Length: 448
Image (cartoon, rainbow, N blue to C red):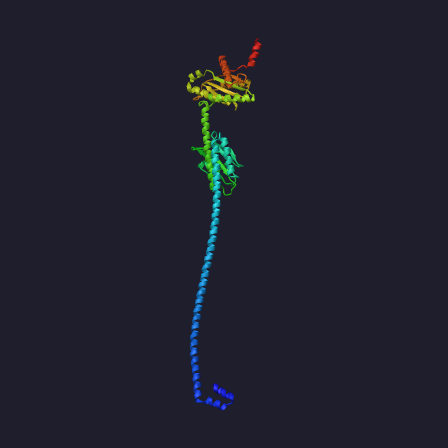
């Protein structure tokens, strides 16, 4: 082909055509074209194989990428789930911690309140043990209720055995609407013998009055003896919490024991200075009271009169009617002395049928007038024994006064005793007032 082209370029067209038509050249050309066609066919085969390999690799790559993307998505979803779960767990943990913290705070507050309540109750118990009378115990208990439960109101009522009723003896807070006196059957707490409250739909006690304020009644009892009832109201709409009810009941129990102990102490103290037959003060108490009243009179400069009283012919009365009749007479006469005595007078059984009366602040004339009244009332006294009257009775009395008749109580008592024997020696049934030194001087002057 190069030769043909060269010949054609030199102008040798015939030679070029001859070369083109030469059979050898034609065969060579055909051989070349055949070789080229074979090469092209082989190249196309190789290209098809490579294309198939590329397509297969591409499909594998696509599948691998798909799996990879899916795996990545799965991994991301798992990680997201883990993060969300961790967030939820953390949120739940924070919420639980907040709840636990709130519960701990509430528990700590309740514990502090319980400790404060326990400390207050312990102090109350100590104070109640040192109380001298029921009035002190009631006042201290009321104050502790007011301090522990702000806004509380109520009252403490004790049995009045003479009337078989309960009387309010101590108010708590701004008490209002409670009956001053009521019968035991008007209180459900006393009926049931346990704490009775109105916040659980239980019936309302009639002594409480109207209104819907939550109220509880706690019977006060000790050693199986009912002493009274404690009634409390609260301003809280839901009434008292359990810890408050326990504290209220504990304080009520302490008060009950304190009142029972005070009553026992009063009984023992009364037995130590009271005459068991007449109930009057005995001679031991009279000695202490006389010294106390003389000391008081010395400080304030007032008089103290002392009277010695003796039942006339008591031995004969006792022999006639027996010891039972004599005891009945002593009891009746002691009652008469108590009825005609002032609140500040001290009436004592001196011994046997003799009685002593200490009249603080009473001058001699006043004391004599009061003893004359007792003497006249004694003549009208009728002692009954098994429904039978034991006859008339008379008394004799001697009266003396401090400081006119002595510088000590015993000295004045001896003068009054001497005046008593003078009354007896002059015929009994009379009252003799010992003459004062000024009266004796005036009498001596008149005699001179």
